[in-house]
Length: 130
Image (tube, rainbow, N blue to C red; front, top):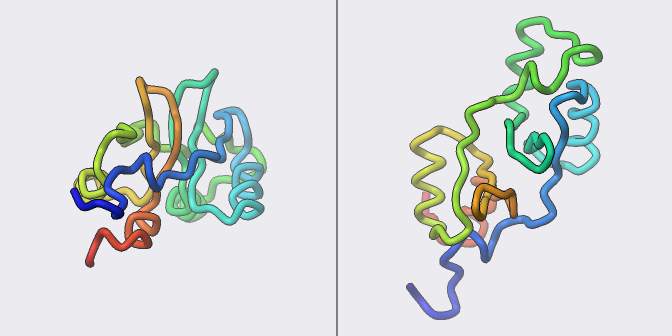
């Protein structure tokens, strides 16, 4: 660890996570992502992470012909959510993202959502030299 350098995901995570519910339509979720200029939404059901939906998911669903006005988020979200603990290092988070091929990583403390980081966040802090 180096003094003055960010080392842990809790130091760089976005704490104001934009979330949606599994009952919202894909169109509602897409509008929210566009409005907030973000690439993913964590899907919560009663404060429990049940999924994540990303820009890639929307492309796949569109290619398959799903109607975004009637299809629910629960039908298009990834239910196998890769998460990381807030005490993890930035390098550890990158390893997890790379291993699971994800670009958005919900950050948890005792399985409760406390933040999110994206691959761009990791790169922007200068810890990763790609």
